[in-house]
Length: 146
Ligand SMILES: CC(C)(COP(=O)(O)OP(=O)(O)OC[C@H]1O[C@@H](n2cnc3c(N)ncnc32)[C@H](O)[C@@H]1OP(=O)(O)O)[C@@H](O)C(=O)NCCC(=O)NCCS
Image 1 (cartoon, rainbow, N blue to C red):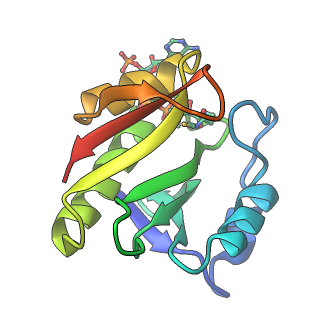
Image 2: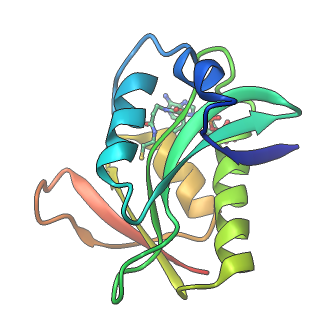
């Protein structure tokens, strides 16, 4: 079972030490945790756990400012744990969290069109392509209902 656990003093070490050889699409665990600090006014870093084992990390915009949708960024599944359905299960857990809290009725994310595994799991979790991102035409904005 895949669950999300907020990164705090108790699990910081196991999350920052997750293995990630390539920094393609998303940075190192240290970088993602630093990004979470930047976004701390509306977002929270969560470790992704599969049956108690730490397998990934994601920053969730779980307290969006007025007028902004839910979102998440920096999602990765660590080396050795990919291609086992955990990425899709993690997005499912994020959507379930949004549905339980229901502060907003939609989720918007940005993803590189060339990131085939990510686009595949987002489509499977109900996301539809909305438009190209303004800041980089390689990126698309995808949206799902909560
Ligand atoms: C995107 C990511 C989170 C997916 O995690 P995951 O646990 O491997 O995902 P899943 O196993 O749930 O599903 C991935 C799907 O993509 C497929 N896939 C994996 N690598 C692929 C590749 N290089 N090309 C095409 N499809 C690929 C898998 O086969 C699977 O599809 P299937 O169920 O039909 O077999 C993971 O690849 C990752 O951490 N990538 C680096 C960081 C990143 O890109 N994050 C997303 C930023 S928007």
